[in-house]
Image (cartoon, rainbow, N blue to C red; front, side):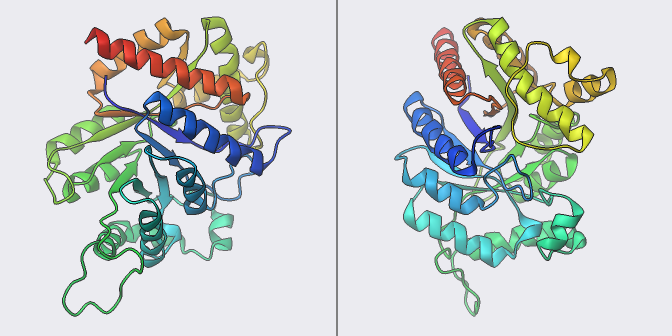
Length: 332
């Protein structure tokens, strides 16, 4: 069983606030640290009333400041929204505050819609320079070079680990070419997963950061004491994806008894396709599903999202998953 990590979208649930979501993120990270999780990542999204991590580096500082050993980072920073120098300074500062614990995952999507991109003062074509921006970011976080006139302070010489995030072959190719770890967003975009992993592994070129390919794969896990309870809790995520197709994104809704009354057959097909890498059920059910998935993918690490409305139930889900990992390791 490979290492387990957490992707927290800092969901703002119906009836709660962004402050509640961020406090819950920290509480989850503190529990995850005790349960042996490897990383705790937060993601950049803008103009979304149900996600509290828009100021991603600030949210990371909040979590890292309340934990001691777990790695904390971005999954990810949407680099087209920012100048590489700004990100180097932000994550150099985080590394200065929490040495050896900060990860920087970067993606080329805007993390929002076109209108919000204009509000961010970003050019939609800025994604085209993503490979060059990654190289610039690497240089700013690396050792100062002779004649270098622009430095990230803090940041220069920190060598904060950079990850490439993706849901297509583009990210796999770039991560392989640069010799960087790769995280695939199969928790919501699984279609190209196996092809991307193959491309990444076959084309990987060792680098100063990484000698061998390291692929982290995103999954959804909703675990509970019974299969029935887990399926009930999962309806919050199913509603969220349905609402996305309807153009009515909002706060995370409480679970419902019968999801079939909520979505149409077409919506069900779309949501189920996007949520195909989801493992929902009791400890035994989740274990069986993960064993098959790991055999198929050969993932070096799993990063787990869990859109559960009730915070205590979400904690319980991650606790069950930690127990599953322990049992799988003992069996191995």
